[in-house]
Length: 549
Image (cartoon, rainbow, N blue to C red; front, side, top):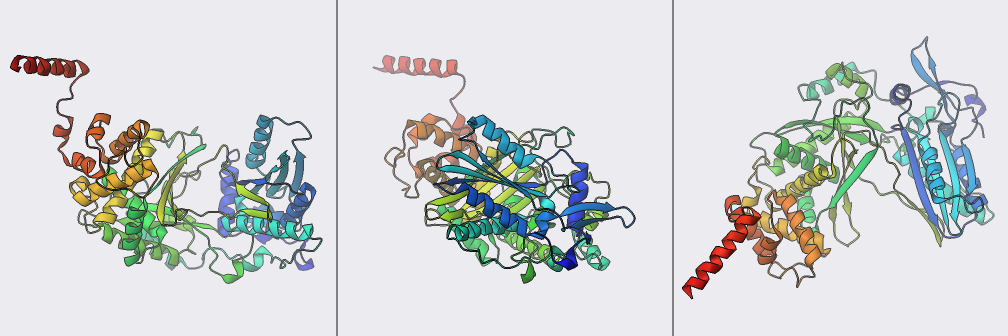
């Protein structure tokens, strides 16, 4: 499929974002940071020839997916042409060909992470792989230079529409996709005054965050293979946090910004932060349903001091978010050049931390009994030193905040991320139980309601139920010895105290364990000593008892 005659043979100027991605792709030629792979597992019997045809037709329709890129050295600009061949789409019958599971896995990894030659081939590929009679993989990989998260959902939906129409013997009803040059505007380069305004707003903020690194982020050999860990907050805390945030006009994303800034401040002492955020960039209705690269990276600033309460921090996060979104068309490269001129081009600009709203992708539905769901990528890659994704889970019928951390695996150990998730949990509990409390007040366990809420929420997490009574014993609430051990670990992480199984066994209710956390650390740990000391103590107590009798 080709463009309209007016578009044939024409080279269009890339947007500033695309030009930046092209430069980074050349710098990091062997890194997969700028690919957007997706693996959908389809269950149910389907027509593989029909699915392959639907994918070919959907991908071949869009000019962006047929792009080729080049550098114009005279004009010092990157250009693209779309009068070229469509992406390759293949079909592999791993069942008929006798592929082993590990062979399929290696093939999928190659499809996901093999770089594109942007000047010579389409920046997209797809493969349909039959791995069982009723199980099929659809692997889609597109370079970020022409594709974003919204584009992925649009493409997957279009594949489903096309397949269902072809299965009925009909043509799919799809509108003609516009050429990217007709709708894809770039950041506002022509207003240096606006760049200066943003630079002034961000000036003075550190371009680093005091992250609890276990590895060296400046190691040139650092692997970008990532790791993910998450936590689902209980409904009571979540709903209380969202209620306070709603009173301050905060979105879920802004709430995540406040939680992250407050937790960093409490754990590191840093009080001025720059966070990146990915912005869809589809403010123009004409771009809402267009496959292309519209997304851009923004940087917002959050500051607090010793007198800042959680409620005030939420307001600060809201204002910071609004200021940043209003200036979303100001080019980040110009801002970074002014504030951090010596930065490493291979590193994220301005800050190593990203905060983003977590989005759940819709499944690919081909028939009433055939649906495809996104599978975790193996391996997954992380561009940011630390990324926090915040969302709301409603699967239980109540709103529950879900917090997920993603990072290069070599930068943080699982213990470090678990500890930081527990700190985020404590910050959420502080907002829920006393939003007027100063963020930097470290005596969070001095608040009886906060202690009770913290213990209750961890019981709910361990026992996987929201129905917890404060005066019901752990075992009567559905606990057992194994879950008690898990409870000890979770409460120790959340409270920062080294608790023992016997301590929680004796203080066997939510209320009792909350009172245990209120005891001074010295009292809570008194009498432990070494194993030998405890045995001698028991013998002496026994001897004293015998003498008295």
